[in-house]
Image (cartoon, rainbow, N blue to C red; front, top):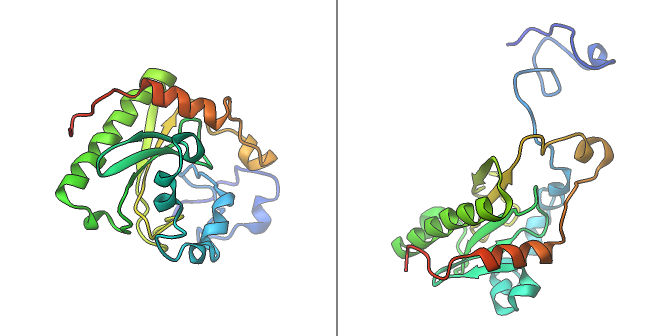
Length: 195
């Protein structure tokens, strides 16, 4: 348990105990995403099957309508409708499967290749300093849409996590989603390594 040194914000002492519960200053920086509570508190139930799953419905629409930047044989790449950062992409298999272990060998290869290509493209068009990659598996694992596997590719820049989202409930996004989609799609190579 980390000792509370008393350093922190005014009023910390009144809400801090010696047990080390959440809210006690520690070595972790936390990314607060309150908008995701809509999924955590029953939002999962709105997506019951392939007919209402946004990741199954998206490929039937135009790229512009669905924010798709690339369509592969077994998977596609789409801009996140609620991005953590500009250029936040998702890699989704066309098949409605919930778990990474449900992918075939062919799907896994293209899924990985599209992830690598997305990182290369984002480096080219946006010059991020790093990335967060991740798949949240299952409702308790934090998946916003647990029924359909998807991997997040979040470009990161120094200082991109500031006080705006927490204090002002505001996220600074420098371009429209359509502009970002077009920029990424135009920079996407004609062929990927898995082909």
